[in-house]
Image (cartoon, rainbow over all chains, first blue to last red):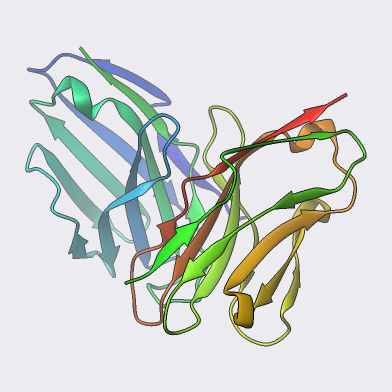
Length: 114
Length: 113
């Protein structure tokens, strides 16, 4: 099973709302990632978790707050977003953060901020 | 610094024709190389990857790619296009010790019946 699941599939939120995106994998992977993908653009790395600890934050605004409660679960908490944050948010996981490891992607959450 | 260039943001081929999607990287050290496919409204699926060893890599759905160090290229090919191959294709690189998977800008493949 090489599946990464993400919920919800779609999310519409206002600029004052608080919402969370959820990502789950049961492959025993110890590295998990959040990417942001704008329309017709490649994915851009936001955060990397390794063994449930945040190892990379690519200068992401604090209105995005990641959380890794356990090795199978990754959340992205959203608060006071801006319309320009509308995008496809992709979660990925890999066995470790080792370079040759394949990252497996979920289907994404399409976020619209009004 | 590393970068990935995908020549041609949009490629059209006839059904049954050869598919060739180009990817060049710039890195002083040969990176690890990946091709991902993204179907509309979906996440990314790994087609194939090159780490070490044989430079011709076979992937899923009949795709293959050849790592050419002298040309710093990792072009993706498929002998005969199917309608189901229509999608966005991303080449990605990762340097040893780096956490980031760095993507090219993508190539949208259209297959004409």
